[in-house]
Image (cartoon, rainbow, N blue to C red; front, side, top):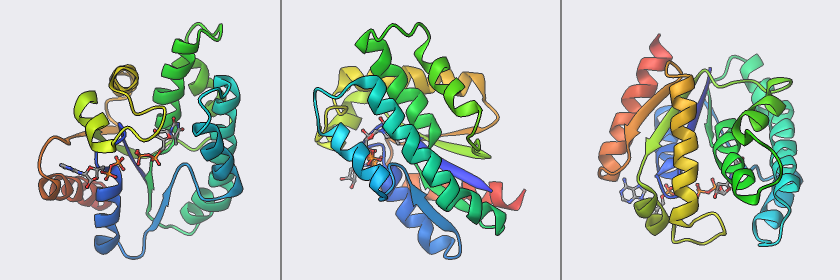
Amino acid sequence: MLITLEGLDGSGKTTVWEALHDVYPDATFTREPTDSWYGEAVARSMGDPEADPLAELFLYTADHANHLSETVRPALSDGDLVIADRYSDSRFAYQGATLARADAGIERPVEYVRGIHAAFSRPPDATIYLDLDPKTAAERAGRTDKFERDGYLAAVRDNYERLIDADPGRFHRVDATRAPEDVVARVEEVVADLVER
Ligand SMILES: Nc1ncnc2c1ncn2[C@@H]1O[C@H](COP(=O)(O)OP(=O)(O)O)[C@@H](O)[C@H]1O
Ligand SMILES: Cc1cn([C@H]2C[C@H](O)[C@@H](COP(=O)(O)OP(=O)(O)O)O2)c(=O)[nH]c1=O
């Protein structure tokens, strides 16, 4: 089973992902961007304010393709529980927002990015969405990269909401404004339900 954690920067994904290690020591824990050289290329692009938004989309997507073949598909074939800190929905929401803003000539950017993935990706079985307002998210994240600005994050959040509306059965919304221990406890409940199903 593939479970992904999604949400704005600073929503607490990494905090939750780390807490889940203790509960599921045999699971495969992974993340995007990965620490492969594809992920390093992504990091370079993120650090470049002039990066071309379409080129950046394809760097993230290349990292995803490699993540699938190197980590996600082999672990799923072994019957592992896979828990990923960010996955394809991050591309749909973030690059959807970046492409809309860049006026790259793509009319429906979220659908465009989804379409690119449809041919090769492996959709998550379930996605936990850590729901947080953009202002708090940007504050918690410390606005350390070019994405972590509340205006941009508001557009990303709108895209996440559209993705949830389109696939409500897959998403599990968790209120990320609460104290870390409450958020962790709620996510652990959701994951336990999913695994027991
Ligand atoms: N529920 C929470 N309430 C307040 N602060 C939090 C909460 N969850 C995480 N944080 C803090 O916010 C920052 C970002 O958390 P992190 O887990 O790295 O989020 P993400 O991986 O989604 O960017 C960290 O400093 C973390 O300690
Ligand atoms: C995986 C992925 C991440 N991102 C962005 C979201 C983050 O701003 C940044 C780095 O991701 P990450 O390291 O997960 O940041 P955080 O822990 O703060 O959420 O990359 C995309 O824009 N598209 C993607 O496909």
